[in-house]
Amino acid sequence: MWFPRGARRRSSISFPPGARTALTYLAIFAVIAAIMGFLFWSTMTAYQEFQHAGNRKQANELGAKAQQAFNEKRFDAAASQYYQAWQLDPQTESGRNARENAVIAAINEGIRHMRVGRYADAAQWFRRAIQYDPEYPGSYDPLAQLAYNQGQGDMQQADALWQKGIDLWSRRTAKGANSQARAEAAKSLEQVQRNAATAWLNRGDLLQQVGGRAAEAQQAWTRAMQYGAGTEIALSAQRRLNQSGGGWGGGGY
Image (tube, rainbow, N blue to C red; front, side, top):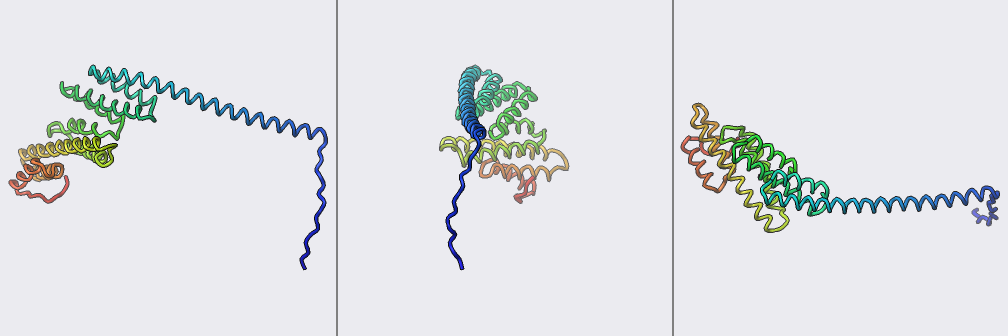
């Protein structure tokens, strides 16, 4: 049978005077440690905020210098200064804009070299633009044009660069920040597709002129049709295929 237990008398715990003093000191030390920890955290937070404010001010100053350099067509200096501004302030919208501006300045510097025949320097600047921001689509087409080299270069490398640019522009077309950004991305996407289609069309023409490479020419024209679907470039490629007896089978290159 279960019976409730009777209440037990609890004996109080007593400490000798020396122990009570030690416990009091420990409690005081714990409070002091907590206060010091809070002060350290507050100081570090304030320092980080101060540092961020200083970085943001420096970034704004660099951005202003970069904008002046860009307006003066000193694209090399503008690219470097914009990129430094982004590194100082990478989390804000201004910082992200500075990064994209660095890419655009680098592309412009590459185009400047390209126009005067300094192709190696141009390629270096296009690659730098990609290093600044691999997700910016506009760096890939000009580098692809250099790799293409009027049909005499590395078409596989050029094609890979075009594919990358097309993929990135397609993303911006679908997920741009606003309707204007999406419309601009769509225009850029169409231009890159036309550039790639024209390159493959010309490549096919060159291959046709070389004996024993008719099959490669047909593959190049097929690629042109894939890039330029619905354009006059695709129609030109189709006519060449028909004349060569290839016909379009929809295959890849």
